[in-house]
Each structure stands twice: as C-alpha cells, then as structure tokens.
Length: 203
Image 1: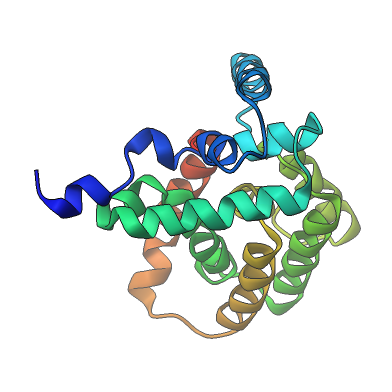
Image 2: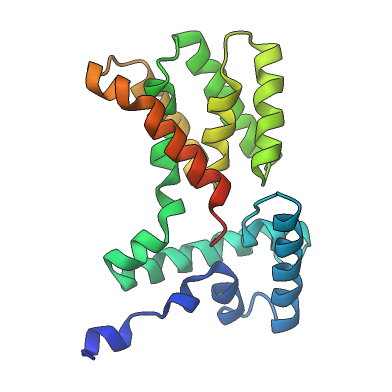
C-alpha cells in the first residue's frame, strides 16, 4: 500500500450520510433514521438521495446539505478517478444540460424546459416522481414541451449550482445545431441519463 492509498478516503467515507456524520451535522441515531427512511422509500419504488431525506426529516438545513456536498466533492477529488466515478451523480448536470440538444427541442420547448428546471429549483422536488409531475404540468401549460426530458433532467440534479449550470449550458447548447451522429446517439444518451436518475442513491 502506497502513502497515496493511505491518504485517500475509503468508499464508505464518500457517502454523503457519512460525510454529514463526520462533520457533526447529524448524530449516529439521526443518520440511521434517515437511512431507514431512505430504504422505506426505495421499497416503495421512490429513489431519493440521502441528503434530501435528511433535509425532509429536518435533520439538516439546506445550507448544511450544501456544506456536506462540498466536502463530499472534495473527498471525491482526493479519491482520484475511481472516486469521481463513484460520484457519477455529480456529472448529472452535464447529462441534463445536453437533453434539449439531444432531443432536438425547438426553441420554445427549450425555454419551457429551462423554466421547468428553475421552477424545480424553487420547489425543490427531491424525487424522480415529483419531477415527472412537474414535467406533465409544464406540458399542460406549455404544449410542445417534453415531460420526459424535464423529468429526466431534473432527477439528475441537486444543489442550486447544478440547476443554474444546467439551465445556462442546456439553453445555449439547445439552440445550436449538432452533428447528425450525435443526434442519432441522443436517445441512447437520454435513456442512460434517465437510468442514472432512477438508480442513483449514493448521495
């Protein structure tokens, strides 16, 4: 074992719940309560991030969650490439930002998509099912918008920086023409993005 290996955080330490515990934001009993609630939601078919569960249970504040996420990102960076792969949800905003371009949305739909993402930031929907609801509401208010694109994009996001970055990048890229090959690969990338949204539960 090299000195580098000894200084890299263990996989368990990369979990947001463990990060919050190590920072003193929650106690062991509170973390267990959140983990139990997350498992109950998962059993009901609702995949929710542990940070959102702790927030919903009022175990931490939004500011404390952001602090824990910042520390988690630091630990993932310290863990190197493997750690960044484990933290794949942090790449979610890049996938989400490509949704308008890959689904070839017209400009009006890109605007509706951007508005829905910002509305999601304001409402803080923390589960894919809430994003599905927001997607359908947006489709009713703005016909021509894509509820699946909104649900898939929003489910990948956490933290206001990701929301804002997704809207800015997605709006810009969505209005640019893409090569035909990338457009053909779009549906596959969207399926991968939705899969990541539905099965992410590490953070």
